[in-house]
Each structure stands twice: as C-alpha cells, then as structure tokens.
Length: 135
Picture 1 (cartoon, rainbow, N blue to C red):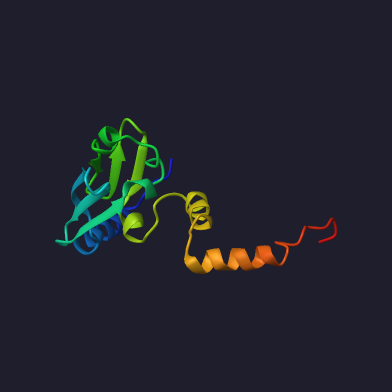
Picture 2: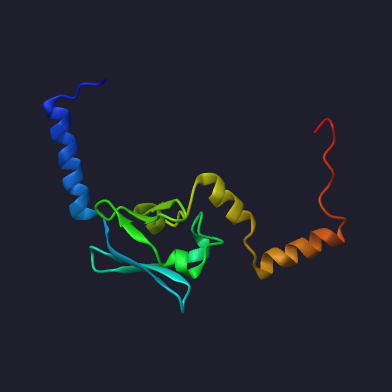
C-alpha cells in the first residue's frame, strides 16, 4: 500500500478544488427524443449536446435506454446503467466520444464530397496498388 504524505494529500485536494472552480461539470443530463441528442447542462451556464450515435456504446441503444442517462460523481461523467456505458464529460467537450480505437474507427467512416471525388478518381486509375511481399 502506498502511503501519502499530508503535503501530497493537500496538493491533491487543491487540484480538485481548482478543477471544480474552473472546469465545466455537468449539472443535469437528459436525452431529447425529437433531436436524438444527449443534452448536458454545465456548471458554467453552457449546454452541450451531441448525437447519441456518436457515443461509444450508444450506437445501437433504444430511446428508452438513452433516456436513462445519469450524471456521475461531481458531474464529471455520464452513465447508462442498462448499457454499462460511461462517458467522460471533459472528453466529450474535447470531441472524444470513446476510446482511441473507437475514435479511429469513426474517423475512417467520415464522408464528404471531396472524399467521394478522390475515391472515384483513384478508382478510375485502377484503385489502390496491391501490397507486395517486399513492401
């Protein structure tokens, strides 16, 4: 077991106090069925919303399951008991809707007219070159 000094405990408490004062935390969370959005009210007076399908573990959830959102702890996270899903509010605010691997898979699915045009042009040239055993 690691023993903490009074100074380390005091420093940790000071960091926590500073975070509570300066970092937005959730004060309320709900699911809006009409907009298909998870809506989070923050301590700084702002409201943050995101499409439910963006959150890792929420992609295939029913509306009733999504409506069961709860705040974690001191407003640092969102929790769905029936789905066994937890999302960090600071991460959501930073645009991170899941783990690094989950975000990488989502990035590969992005579509745009420029991406579609590039894929058509590449296809017209014969597509991506095949990998060789040496390269």
